[in-house]
Image 1 (cartoon, rainbow, N blue to C red):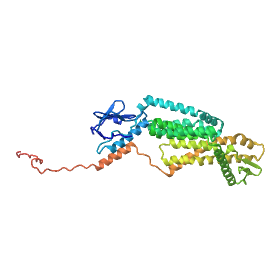
Image 2 (cartoon, rainbow, N blue to C red):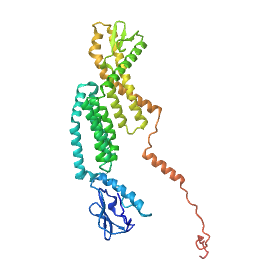
Image 3 (cartoon, rainbow, N blue to C red):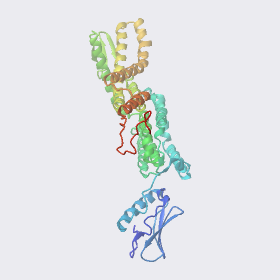
Image 4 (cartoon, one colour):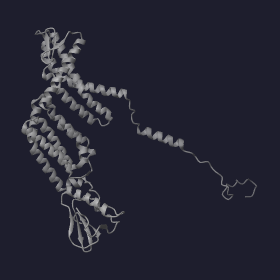
Length: 437
């Protein structure tokens, strides 16, 4: 875009011009050539008079009403003026500045944009939301999904003090995750390929795009923990879920068999896939429901929530809490299977009290007790970290004031009294009795 005519260059008439409106958001501008010179106008009321050699009344640079295009043209204008105008001429326009949040929220354009985006996302992803809720209601491994949106909202509420006071919108880069989310969800739903997973990830990407468009990058920095936590409500692809659950069954079988051998039982592993523990005539199979996948998904989500909520702890502790949630969940399931196996070993394939205890109480009760057991392991881990790495508590206010006062008093030097050499200013001796003054 040429910003200078063939017979002239652009210069500022008054290099000391400093309009407060220059710091405001600029969505369009116009540069016009008049018989008396060039005029740069932006907004509706603010104009700056320029000087250009040459005459003519044609308009030679106009930006559209689009904020994104206006921002690009502003950058082009500044770069061109840096090239055309000799130093030390300053730039005509600053890069577009963000607006106060209160002004943005009250604007009709922002409200209409938010409404259109939310309605569009709701229409495009309503079937994916219905399918996801159906998974929560019908599959026990994902029943924790009902709590995930509320935990994500609570995380955003706790970060309300980090909500950006200034907003630069619309952010055109927000269209990238919005379009990508819609494309992923459409592909997964049309071809039934990892359908629930694709719809869930697509919805999260679309919400990320909406936040980025209407709140800009500062708004995304505020909202990313809540958006990231929504991943725990998404169902894994079936192929990965089956493979993962089978590996968990094998790990639980081998570890439980090792514990039984440590307790003195002559147990061994057999059955299809190595998921059956045999002790004499007693055979204990680790079924799909006993793989621990449900416990693992739930406790990993809880570990992520704990790591995000423990803002007063150092980052290393928070990462440790999240990383340790996986082995803690697996260990809890191993202990559950071992305890259940001990009860059935005592029953010895007979219809007695031990078998009734294993069928009616221990098998189900051990599953419910896994979560308190895992939380106890997490608490023990944090206590161990606090014991190994002692962090001194911050000093109290009174202690700080006392130390500061003592330090100031110790450094205070009383100046010695000096006698001036001037006889007029020197102290006079006191008169004695019988001696005239």
